[in-house]
Length: 253
Image (tube, rainbow, N blue to C red; front, side, top):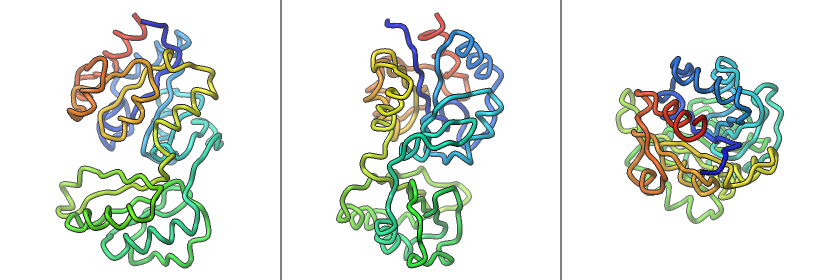
């Protein structure tokens, strides 16, 4: 195996359990060992910077990472925007026309800002945004996907729904080229790492593009079957500290 210079990791379901903001002691120790060994660890997450900064500060992560599902690369300590591929205001307005009739909560803004769909006036949108997020009626998802497909040039990522919100499901929409594949390609340029020197680790469907830009592909034990099929190796689940296992087996060893 080639020496790994860059590890690109998903957050939710990989580095931490979904929605959590603090790693386990095993993950924290593995992260510290990686940094001591001179290996750059970068996140690639659907979270906006504002929802991940606290986690990065706690584990001492530094350098560039990928946010907004692949639409932005920022310095994790300063928040400086290093690369972006955002949705323009006219495209946001087109998306709003499709989504708002079926949405409960939405985020159409340059920084994370979830509001009730009833409070959004698409005509008042004045700034580009990295993504559109919406909590929509599950029964309307197929129709929404069909309408958005007609707009062309968009990626639509489906969430898994919420136990506390039955009948609703999350959508995240980005530009076609604002995904983890294109963002990792740009990230590798920033840190001077080749594909062979890059290890990717994740658990969900939006990590499939991430795998395309890495020489070593690791699926978490809780990953979807399709991602496991693409992986070179599968480790334990996030609850069993699979991330730490992966770093110890395939990088630090």
